[in-house]
Length: 293
Image (tube, rainbow, N blue to C red; front, side, top):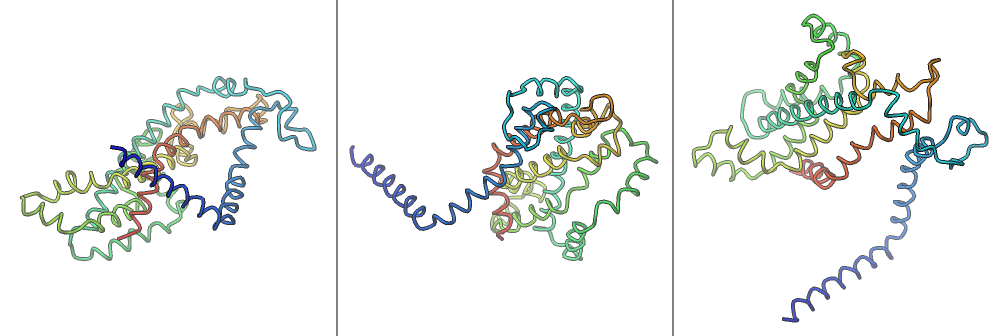
């Protein structure tokens, strides 16, 4: 009975020795990674320090990194100066709706390009990828005119329609992942009488959990952080949190309260950080597996 425990201890000892060996041989790589991590964390650290300062402290020169006395009430003001919960719920509904729809529609498009045969499929795939290089500014005026004529301004219908239309980059991710699934699995399902619809929903989609999470996170964070589209298509009452923050934190004379804006920005990015923290394992796996056929 002692043998399995001895084997576990040996395996742990080997793992520890391999980690020490890696650090000793690649100390320069580890040092560079630590320096880069500190560089990337520096802006967020400065944002946190700004959120804890008063306005007079922000104007002091030379610059002080740390506040004399932390102003925790800045976070309370960030929530109370605007209808924070209302705008947060608007953003959450909009981002969740769009991310869910565009993930499923992109999966369908990726499955079609990866597993179905049709004349001109490769040409259509190249045309879809070419739209990634199309600047969004070129489509702003036609999109606004189209939605305006159909009476869809100040509604969530534009995001609903965009979600149904799929996204080229996400479709490419799904196409690469589905193309790597063995064809024998598809052939066995066809022999059992499955249609391509059942193959997609019952076999391919459950296998694509890493890519599903990756696509959802990309779409959700993109919509959550979008400022331009809500500013263009939504009124002030129905707008998102990002737009409300850009115009709501002022002193009544159109002077921005920088410390309150910094506190609101920390609260604004917290949901995205939490989503990425809990989904990072699937996110990284989805990016890696989608690039390997």
